[in-house]
Image 1 (tube, rainbow, N blue to C red):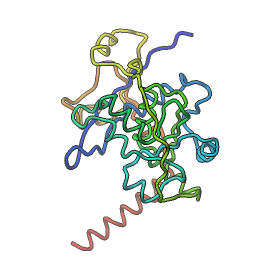
Image 2 (image 1 turned 180 degrees about the vertical axis):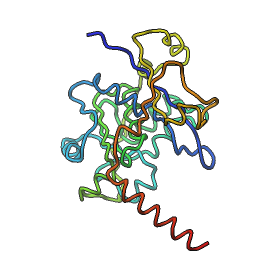
Image 3 (image 1 turned 60 degrees about the horizontal axis):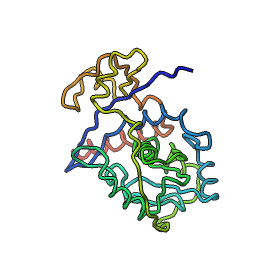
Image 4 (image 1 turned 120 degrees about the vertical axis):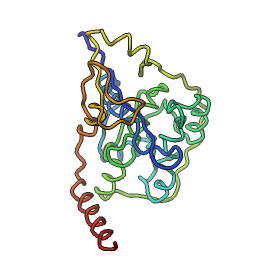
Length: 256
């Protein structure tokens, strides 16, 4: 079968104080999903809470990729944490991976071995989980899954949470990046005229149209198709979140 190549793009932006990333790496979210059919059959791509519970029983690594403070407030019993994956594994200036040797040390100290079965999670639908999935694949892992509903789904299902830290035995890692999972700007330019390549822009519709500029320039790559990654899933908690936000706004207005 002749499989068409699919490239996805997204601007990676910073907001807030310093280099805190609040909206980033949508490219990895959709790119990871697009690669899911290429993952070996033993690795379920997106999994549910029952899968995570079974994975823990068979000794898989469950990796909580949120920041340390969130992890300490409560996490899946048995899950490990090495800090916010979006921050500790990436250079805040270039937004590329930090040096491979440093990643070997961070993951190795936490016992996160890409050669083992790994389930990653964050909050529901957070791109951090999909970035972690991409990172494990990028560094050679083949048996990695995303628990899309994350800590929110786990709590909704009344499954056990804990606040004590889980520590795995450190491992010595020698990682070899797989450059085939992403393309450079030069490679992108060479593929613009290739009819067998589809370019997906997974940012918001306003960013795609150049109305919301969060990169050096507004607009999109010629020929790209816009499929915002956030429109590919539905948060069942949305009504409640909106109601809470409206209530908070009402209280703030009343105080003015």
